[in-house]
Length: 366
Image 1 (cartoon, rainbow, N blue to C red):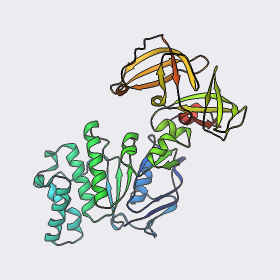
Image 2: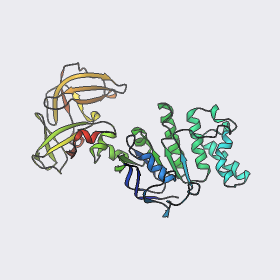
Image 3: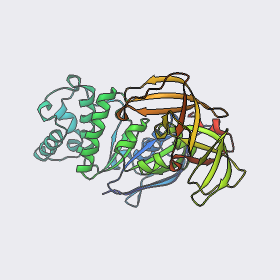
Image 4: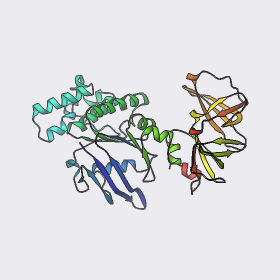
């Protein structure tokens, strides 16, 4: 089974650096997703791995074998595009069997393999249908089966569900994840959908401006992102200017406006200006007397979000803070312009150094 190593990969288009010194390891049977804003280089990276794009510098190794000079057809890599690329004049059976037939496998072994794959994606009964007779989701499942029919154990998915509607996309990603897991495949999945990447991956790689910003296990990246950009791109957060005013055994104390918050961060120094990030769902909102680790403010907006109610709270000396209250915890009797207390636990206060180019520039997605 394949182990992938990317070393010092760079690609330029004129003055544009699509990739810059990319180093990445993908372990055998690991499902890795690459996410980032449009133009960050994630599709260029996966196309370099497939052999569609030739890098200017660096090397890609699959099981310690250099791939740079290996033609596309000899890389034994399955590739699935965002756009469905089935042969429209071929039936589903013929589409899936295309690879084995080109490789010279016997008709009997080819039919056995294709039947197994169509059964796996639950489309064996549609073997004699043409692609146009299937839904978009079913067509993309056939595209995955065709990629697997060539015997590839390394599967590259280039935003394969991007053209599908939200409900079909959510269902299909779990089906494909289970299928690749059952088959023991190594997968690199490029997507712009943060929820998709977080829900199905063993590891998530975050890219920006042709570089890898950071990578890690989805839950750790969400709860403890090392970079401000990651905290912003994976979900949502309130980013607030603060000052370190004290150090305790538990961490540091920061001041926001008139309020003080305890954090578990131990890297700061007294007097340092920092940026803190707090996710809206980790803030508790209610009435009552303020206590420790609490901000007070006035509600300026209330919006129903389906699973939660979103409050915008104006805090004196601080930017407006967004709070999400899950409806599973019950409705709150809070009205517009009402005074409220916002409570947050110290571990949920993420502390960062002020970016050299400024917070707004660091948060930009382009």
